[in-house]
Every structure is written in C-alpha cells, then in structure tokens.
Amino acid sequence: MADVLRIDNLSAGYGHATVLRGVTIAIEAQSTVAIVGPNGAGKSTLLKVISGLVRPMAGEVRFRDEDMARWSSDRVVASGIVHVPEGRQVFPGLSVAENLWLGGYSHPERRQEILEDVLTLFPRLRERLSQAADSLSGGEQQMLAIGRGLMAAPAVLMLDEPTLGLAPVIIDQMTEALMALRARSNLSLIVVEQNLQLTRALCDRAHILVDGRIAASGATEELVGSDVMKIYLG
Amino acid sequence: MQDIVNGLAQGTIYSMAGVGLVLIFSVVRVPNFAHGEPLMVAAMLPLTLMTFYGVPLPLALLIGIAAAIAMGVFFSAAVFARLSRYPEVALLIVSLALVVLISSAAVMLWGDSPRQTPGGPDIILDLLGARIPIMWLVIMVTALASTVALDFFISHTSPGRIMRAMALNPFAAQLMGIPVKRYHALAFAIGSGLAGLAGALFSLAFAVQSTMGAALALKAFIVIIFAGMGSIWGAFAGGLLLGLVESFGASYISSGYRDTFGFVFLLAVLLIRPAGLFARKTNA
Figure 1 (cartoon, each protein chain N blue to C red):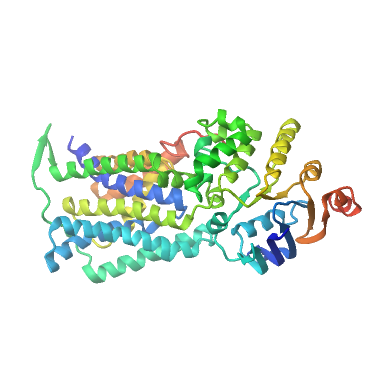
Figure 2: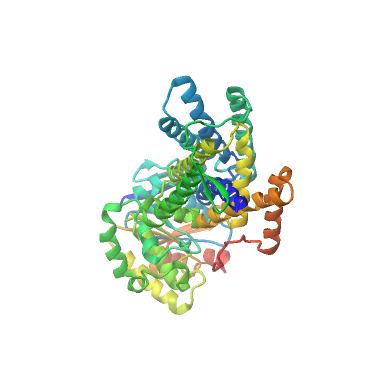
C-alpha cells in the first residue's frame, strides 16, 4: 500500500527549544499506527507539526506526495488530515450538535450525511445533541471530540491520548468504537497512546519516540513486550 | 433628570465602542488599544468630505464608517495577523504604537481643535424638565439596534457561531479547519464598524477632535473590564453605566474630574466583583 503521509528527518520545536530531532515515519494508506513514548518525548508536538500548528525547523512532511510543511491548519484539514487533541478540547458553551457542525466546517455540503454516520458510530451523542458539551461525561466528551474530527471526512485521523483519564469500562467502549473506525476502508489512524492494551488491539505498527527521536519502529505485536518498549515505557 | 439623560447619551457611545471591542477581544484576543482610532476617523472624516468635496451628509457618514471598517481590517490583516506568535504584551505595545501614529497623522491632517459635523437634526425635546436633543435619541436607538443585530448575528448565523467557537477555544477552532485569520478580520471589521458608527453619530451631537481615540479606547476597556469580558450585553450596559457615573460625578462633585470617575468606579467594581459586574458563573 502507498504511503499517505511521509515524515522525513523532521526537526521541530518552540522558539529556540528543539523538541523533535530527525524524526522519520511513513504512514501507509488505511493503516493504524501508534506513536508511543514517555511524557515529553515530543508525541503531541509531532501531531501539531502535521496539523500545521507548529512549523518544522528542518525536514519534510508530505501528504499524498505533496509537500505540506508550510500548509496552514485550515488547508491541512481541508486536505483530509484531522487532529483530535489531547484533553478533548470541546467547545464548552456550545451544544453537542454545534460542536459537530463546527467539525464539518471544511465539508459543508456533506455535513448531514457525515453527521448520520458519526451518530451511528456514537449513538450516545444522538441522545445528547442539544446538551452543552461541557455537561457531558469524560467518555462522552471524548466521543464528541472524535466524532467532531470525523465530521471533516478525514483520510488521516490523528488521536492524541484518546483514553487519557477515562474509566476502564469507558476505555473498553472507546476501544470498540476505534476498532469500528479502523474497519473503515478509507481511513488511516495515527494514535498517540500510553495504554499498551489499546495500542496492541488497534495498531498495526508502532513507533517509539524518546527525547524527540524515533528509538524503535516495527509491528506492534513485536514491539509491545519487547525489551526496548520495557526500557522506555516500563 | 438632565444628568440621567446626559449620562445615557454619552454612555451609548461608550456602549457601542465597548460592544465592538468585546467582540474583537473575545475572538482575536488582542488588547487593541487602537480601537478608538477608527471611531475618531469616522467622527472627523465626514466634515472634511462635506467641506472640501461637497459630499452630502449621509454619504459622508457612510464613507466615515467604511473607513473605520477598512482600518479594522488593516489592523487585523496587516498588523496583528503577522504578529500572532508574539506574546500579548508585544501586541499591546504595537496597538499603542498604532494609537500614536494614527492620532499624530490625524493632528497633522485636521489639527487638534474640537469640531462638530453639521446637518444633524436640531430639534430639542423637553421631557420632565430635561432637554433632550433628538440626535441623542437617534444615537441611543441606533446603539440599541446595532447591539441587537450583533447579538442576533453571533447567536443565529454560521459566521457568528464560528466566532463564538473561536472565543471559547481558539486552539480547537484551528483544528476544525476554520480559517482563523479570515474570522479575525471579520471580527475586526464588525468591531471597528460599530466604533465607526459610534464616531459618525457622535460627531453629529458632540464636539470631536483628532486626539479623542485613545481616551475612548481606554473607556471602552473600562467598560469591558467592569462589565466582564466576553459579554456583548454586559458591555452595552457597562457603557451606559459609565456614562451615568461620569455624568453624576461631573454634576455633583466636579466636572473637572469627569474622566476620573470611571476609573474610580472600575477599581471599586474590581474590588467587589473581580470577574466584572455582569460576568456569569461558568463551569471550570
């Protein structure tokens, strides 16, 4: 399968602080890839660079073989790359329906059709459409954040810590929903996750990011439980 | 009664300036101390157009408001959009620099003497012993109508919903693919347009001068601070309240300290209700 996203020798950071140092990753179309690593390794920064929120200092980011390193965040989303950030980041004073509506900004003509699709994947959201987003439980907010990301009809969906802070029973539900997402033929998933159980269940490949560098890459089954994973993640 | 009417007339100008500023501040998060400059230009330009180019009054007022909108778009696209990665304090200094540059240019162009745009209705009503120029009523009705229109726009239209989302969570708004710079420019255009409308009407009822922008921007900031950041109707009510405080202070204490009363009131409000008079409790 061809690579949908290629990151070559990427360095990036904030001001004079370099966070990512020479990161190289290829994401195949319709694959599910995990980025794992200790806190402060640069996982979220990597997603922000892909999203157009942080400019690379060096290296290349290519989407469908097009250089996207200088794209604005709205062009990134319109092209089909969507970032569901850590901490859900729902719009607190707006309803669930309004949050989803905003997610469909880049495809207004397909909003209704995609909304039905999202509500089928997360039926709980259908019951909460008129409720304020900040009145939802943590798990429901995470469903909303993912559903809102799906409203942009992404080719690549990046999830930053989707199970962080959720109760085990909610994590199970979330895993189920993400497995259903994975089954979609037209979607690639990049998942930043500390939960190795979820990583193992969901992802074909994993990259271990340590101190801004790729320490190991490979099939998830091989990496989870390997010595290198134990060294870096305990 | 006359103090109330005077205060409300002055206060509606503060309201319109405050409502525009609260929109810009909420959506763009820029401490735009140059907010008074579009107001000043819209107040000063019509007389020049009428005197030197024979432009009729309504068209001159519209051109003044259009100039204010253009200034807002310029502030957004040519100045603040390019400095978006700088800290707020740098943006504050830049906005103060804009005040100095624009007001200096205005003094060179128009001098610093007070003037008034002629041609407004000059009927004066008598209500319970208070003299009310009909132009003041026009200003009050326009201020109320423009705030209702803005509230409707923010609550019931797609661009309004997007601007609300940007005010609530700018980071998430970017991740939705919203072209934030375009909406920043729209917020600046609307906010400066309201300031321009205030300036154009103000010049028909009161004396205006080319150095007035900074003081009005400062008062608009007082309004949005003591009304509570982020509330359009809070800013509207806050403007009226500031007008009343100044009017009563000038009448019962001393007119020489008119500009001081607003600051004293602001300090008192911040001590009693730090979040502002009309701020609602929100979930953390």
